[in-house]
Length: 322
Ligand SMILES: Nc1nc2c(ncn2[C@@H]2O[C@H](COP(=O)(O)OP(=O)(O)O)[C@@H](O)[C@H]2O)c(=O)[nH]1
Ligand SMILES: [Mg+2]
Image (tube, rainbow, N blue to C red; front, side, top):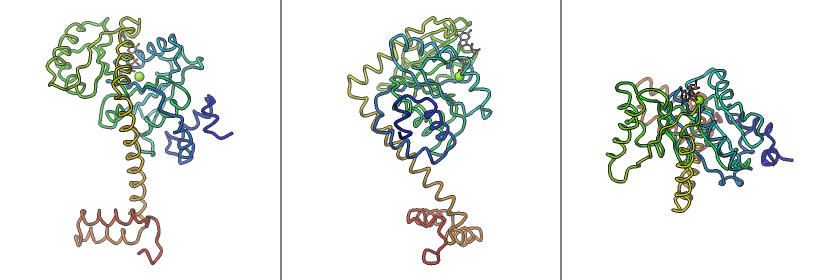
């Protein structure tokens, strides 16, 4: 049986191995991913993003329980590039979502590195596809909402939930800046903490003042640790997913996402080829020497590099290509 088939039949160990390959940028992942692609497109992907410690994992834990109640299979990809030590975030998340550990309808996977298949975003999107092919109908991508890479991750989501904690002082300003563009649902978690009313009021006001045509995410409060407000968050997510389906917007989004993935993958391959060429292609090496002697410039050098990689000379030192 092929690895892809094993994974489709729900072999967790084969799936975990594939995801590790994706995480490590190991080329053995490629043919398996290629075989799995035909079986993707069923899962709805929910991005959950926000600063470390706001309660994303706790919220996801609650959502998993509700989805399981509804008979859904759930996959989670946790991305935490701010924690290079696989221990921290991942063990933490495992513990947080521990009660689902023995449930065959839940698959939780953490990505530790940026991967080489196309950066963090492509790795997360790829792992989400694997979960999709495994038959998960809901896939959550948890990501720390800092930095462009992390924001890019939500491109793979149908619906993005931004989680914030009650703000102190000027924090609300900072929240507003980052969340208006990407949030479909805005969750003020830790509503058992002081400052929640003010935070909800200010965020609601900010959303109301959003320009015409901009997203107007619902602002919901929640206490992930005791489940207060959780059903409302889940209901809003499901409502948005249904809306997309009814409006035919889902297919369009899926097409855009798949094309973006192709771009990511192609760009990554170009980048790898270009790096190899800079070391080993005599024409490129010579061009770089001329560059350093100021006999050419970075713009022309980039053109030479592009042409050499495009024609497949990278790493090929044979005389006729030189
Ligand atoms: N008081 C309170 N604590 C919470 C709430 N949600 C999460 N926490 C706690 O906040 C800490 C960080 O939660 P976690 O889910 O790991 O946050 P993440 O880093 O955003 O994934 C943990 O100690 C949680 O128990 C909440 O609604 N109220
Ligand atoms: Mg977390």
